[in-house]
Length: 255
Ligand code: BG6
Image (cartoon, rainbow, N blue to C red; front, side, top):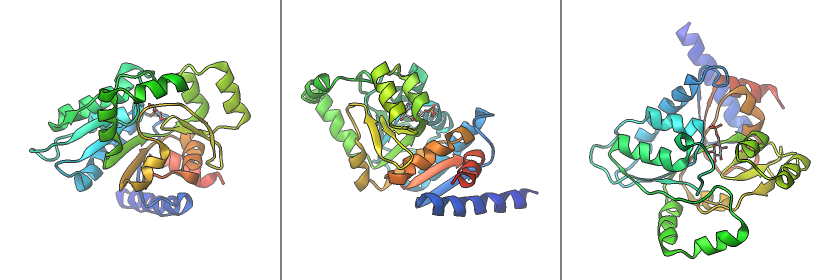
């Protein structure tokens, strides 16, 4: 039965890779909507993959969320001697502390004997405060590190779920609903064609910055995220997806 399961997952991986047009894919068995610990399984798969790509001086940028937090839980030392720097991909203190990018970066650094830098910036900024913050020298310095990250680990969320989690103002909520926003990643909201419906002004990695990165790894699972994953990958610049069987099967059923 093990072997059969393995070949089933292999087929799913091949089919999904083609459907999404993504370079690398890993599917773990299970459904993270039903069992929270499947996120930890995706985390373990991610850590295993990181072992192949992390160099002793890598800069790793991470987003927040429960899925990326599970990668931190699964993290283990990779190189005993290293200069890893873990940074939040974008500023954001809107999430619960355990699921904030800052916290996750610190935890990953702790577990791998690496270093971390933090950004203390509210999740949602007005355009005016954004411009002002960008001029702060200390913010400018960490921003350079973030932009220079070799590896990016990020979550993908359902647009409306994420908007509610962020206490999004009614006006923006309406804009998202009218624009049929399906997915959210890096503070960008996308429709089912991958077009940007709305973008939160945030300091840190912008969508265009992903283009010249070698390793942009999306981690998202659960059948409830199937449409969101499909939407993000319409235009998404990530070259790897780590997901679970439930999301993968649902994605292949939708079309
Ligand atoms: C947030 C990220 O912290 O986590 C979002 O800023 C992402 O971009 C979300 O969509 C995913 O959260 P979760 O808990 O579903 O992994």
